Image 1 (cartoon, rainbow, N blue to C red):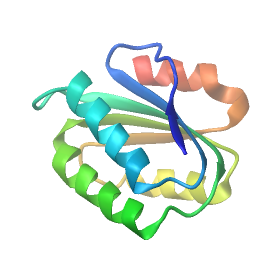
Image 2 (image 1 turned 120 degrees about the vertical axis):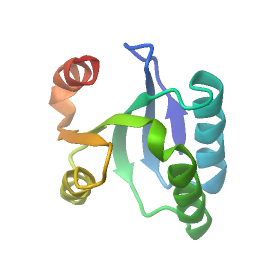
Image 3 (image 1 turned 180 degrees about the horizontal axis):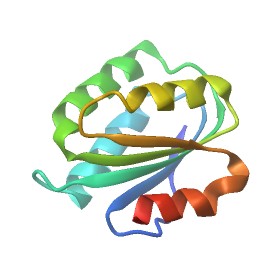
Image 4 (image 1 turned 180 degrees about the vertical axis):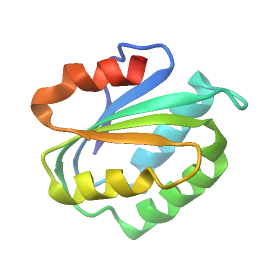
Amino acid sequence: MLSFIPSQDSQTIAFEVNETVTKEDLLKLKRAIEEQFPGDQQFNAFAIMQQVKMPTVKALIEEVKIDIKHWSQYNKLAVISEKKFLETMTGLSNFLPGIQSRHFHMNEMEQAWSWIKE
């Protein structure tokens, strides 16, 4: 389930993921991105990943479609979690052009916000 949380930065969409992400969750995220950051406006993402389970197949397909459509808009991605696989995935995404990503632990949320705002 994906739920939006208050953002500390006008150029950042903030959300929390708990359990399994569905296609409907990602469609909700897509609508929020398109409303808050129309056209080619760049934005950051602040994602708190709680007890995350593998997304559904439909969700994975929807995520790829969202990523392709908004690729040039992504700026920074802060992933906050205690999951080792998410830390690894976040590090790997730094190799993708145009995106800066960084993993933070749950007790580092303020550092994550500071990094996003730099």
